[in-house]
Each structure stands twice: as C-alpha cells, then as structure tokens.
Image (cartoon, rainbow, N blue to C red; front, side, top):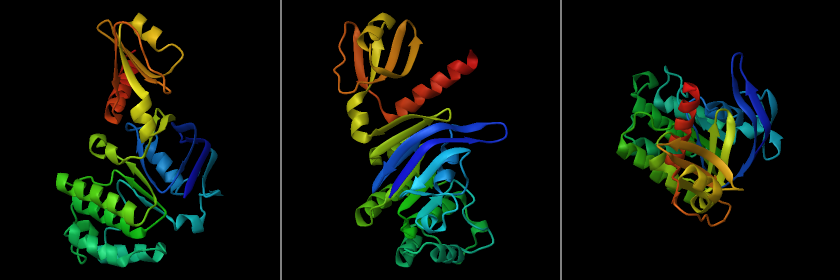
Length: 288
C-alpha cells in the first residue's frame, strides 16, 4: 500500500490544522506518526482514513484519492482515540458489524484476541472501562487485516502488561500478515524501537520524515558555545536550536558528515528527546 500526500492543507473555521504537507509512505512497514497535541496528527489521520476532505492538496492511496472512495476505504482501518463503537452494542455485535465492512476480516483472530484481553463478547460497550474499549479497538485493528491499519493512541487505560501485549501483537501480525501500520502515540520511549519510519508534525507542518536508520545515523545534537556550535554546524540543516546558560544546543541533520570542532560535544537524539526539544521551543515562543 502506498500513501501519497501532496501539498495538503486543512483549515477549520478558526484554525489551520495542516499547512502544505507533502510526503509519501509505502508498506508493509510500521510508521511512527508523532507530534504534540494540536500539531495536526488526528486531522491528518482522518484525512488518510477518508473521513474528511482536504482544504487543498490531495491524499491518494495506491494512486486513488481516498475521500469517499468506498473500494479503497475497505482496506483502511482507522482505530481512533475514541468513538469507535456504538455504546448500545455488545462486543460481539461490534465485531460482527466490522466483519461486514472489512472483506479480509479474520474472525478466528478476533475470538483469540478476546481471550487474550479477557473480554466477554456479551458485555455492552457502554459497560466497558477505558482499557477494555482500547482492547476492543486493538482487536478490531488487527482482525480487520486492512492493508493500511491506523492506531491513534490505541492503549488508553491499559496497564504496562496490556501495552506490551499490543506491541508483541504488532510485531507478530507484521511478520504473519505484513501491512502498512501507522501508530500515533505519546508513549514514544516504549514504542520507538518498533518504528521503521518516523514522521513528526509540528505546528501543522511536517518537520521530519526519516527512516529509523537515517534517524540513528544522521540526527545529532551538537552542544557547546554558540560560536563553536555555529561553526561546527555551518551548512547543515538545523532542525532545532536552543540557548541555555551560555550553552547552545543545535539538533541537525548531519547528512552523513562527521561533525568536528573545538569545545563541542555530539550526541545521538532519541525520538522522545526530539519531542521534548520541540516542546521547549514552542513554550519559549509563547512566552515571547
């Protein structure tokens, strides 16, 4: 499956949620789709799922515009953060309803996962805890066998054991039935090792799109005096920079170049650290 996003902007009455976003992702692969609250992630995931249309630009799946494309949509499963199930239905009814929509639905897997998460198929959705509803969403996503399976904060209310079960299932399903998984989560430290490709939205724009290998090899934090850091990073793409206590931190895309200089240190940057840096940058601008 191939998702092509071209010059996509999305505006609401009082807010621009996305600004001229362009990228292509292709599976099978596990994609980390990240950013702070308000960055535009949920809007984008709704666009990919064909639930809303762009204000400008296009979102295409396998070359076809996804909005209202019924054939394509049957191969996209979007497990949103909330509101996935009708409360008056039982768990069994909810899964049955989804089985009619997704042509590759795996009923045996759904039953197996009900036992894994200890869910009673006779229970009504309205009686479930947040963790149970998250488990039902996880079951739906995996059992759909959709070529594009999107999980947006899929494990709200689940404890560490429940989240680890999700991660193990994700690895298992990708091995047994490869597809394009898109995972949006705030628990980045837990999930980052799963990502084969990482996209970060920041203030409605695409800030970074790198493979996991590119991230590990080429995204570097350079620390030292402002003069030393500026000299060492001259000509490189600066992703983020910050001054604190007479020290400058510059996160750069090194592009394979060895960064050298006097009185500087170079460190790798975790995905979690990058989100922390961006949060600090955002708060500093708000104060100014």
